[in-house]
Amino acid sequence: MIVLRILLLPLALLYGFAVLARNKFYDWNILPSKAFSIPVICVGNISMGGTGKTPMVEYLTRLLQDRLRVATLSRGYGRKTKGFVLAGRDSSYKEIGDEPAQYKYKFPGLTVAVCEKRVPAIEKLMSCSFPPEIVLLDDAFQHRAVSAGLNILLLEYSRFSAFDFLFPSGTLREWKSGIGRAGIIVVTKCPENISPGMRKEITDSLRLRSHQRIYFSFPGYEPPVAFTAMAKTVQPRKSFHVLLVTGIARPEIPEAHLRSCYRNVTHIKYSDHHPYTSRDVEKIEKSFLALESQEKILITTEKDLMRLLPADTNKVLDALPCFTLPVRICFPEPDKNSFDRDILGYAGEAQGTKAS
Image 1 (tube, one colour):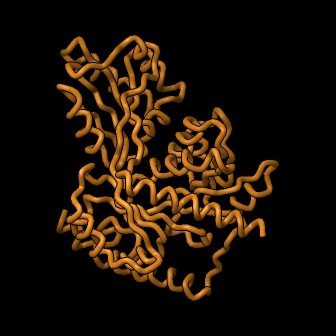
Image 2 (image 1 turned 90 degrees about the vertical axis):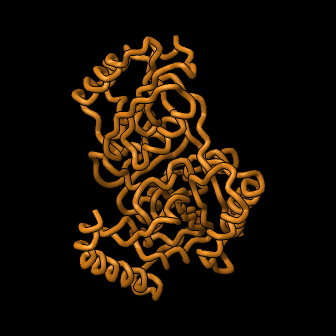
């Protein structure tokens, strides 16, 4: 792996220079960046996958939806469609991507849209019969054609101690200097009891600018939720054997949580955004039936559920006790209060500017 990274270093440097030039063109207004009359919050990262963007968008949705008409806008990674698509109640991941499908599944009244080009997409949303009063841009920190009023950058805790470099030699999407564009930085997937010393060490290492605020968060797993009729007849206990099925970027994190809750966990891993087929589901069924314990359940993530729901894959699962593992982004109490005030303050100020 190290040898491969070294061999890919020249390509990473070429990529890095291209990204640096592109960002400078936006900084110098050579490339246009459009601001909108409604508040726009961008959620993103500078590394590839697994930082917790989906739970953050859901957190912001819960915080804002009772105050404003909220819309989420994503590229729609992995979908089979092109261009602007407005999600309907029954839209599948093949139409809009698994993460947008998850937003619509969990928040039926939420406006969910996907489009490769965010500027015309926001313009279309604003021309709807009931236009949004705030837009949440999912995974758009590098999409600088939109000038978001607030950029929230997610940095994963475990990666602070690991050396990383630009793609394809590493996982960075851009130079770390891009952190300076963020108004709010959230360190995600921290230990729940992260020490004040570690908080200070991370904060000092980032050399924040005067306009930037930093918060620390941890994943909060909720009890498994039944999604098949068979599962609704089962009450999971610590003695159960769990078959965990994942197709996400950091599967070791939910696995570690489940191992702390159940005696045995068998894990079937697929690549991030894996499109499940009937053959995959047959393999999953055989693996489940092969578990020796009589007390057993299948658990998957909410994002994986969106790719397991289509009719060509879910018939087999209907006969199994299948659960999802909901996860939320959580803040320690001082951070939560301050973070919420920052978000609501930005949304209120932006609305007030629009009204004036």
